[in-house]
Length: 138
Image (cartoon, rainbow, N blue to C red; front, side):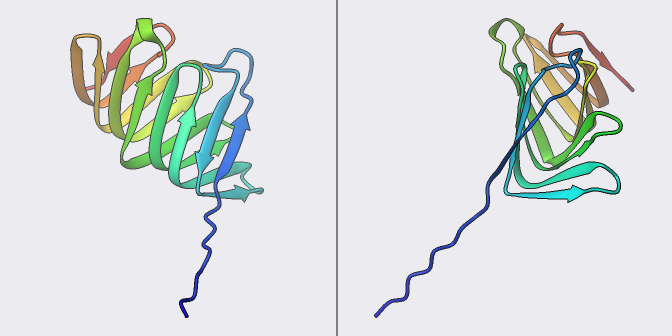
């Protein structure tokens, strides 16, 4: 007789409501594991992290939402990002992605982005997915 085992993998979905001036009024974060760090007011998302807003989709291995700074720090090997808007299409990747509530996203470390017919590679790429403005650091 064969033994059968049921393995339950927790799957979490969080919806963060950032301030009204934010990139998206609603950000959905899914991951296999979530840790609340009450002292620092941080939420850690671990393993198979997927972040969606009205403008972007980000895939990574981990993310930390810092409530005090209103930023999501996303890490992966690499983390990937792509747009949801047809008229403002881009995709990119980096070792770390910072998702700010002021409509800016930073791609940090071995960063690259493809926007329309332009490809940019740099250690730091800063862009606004709502307006399409991109800047780069040396």
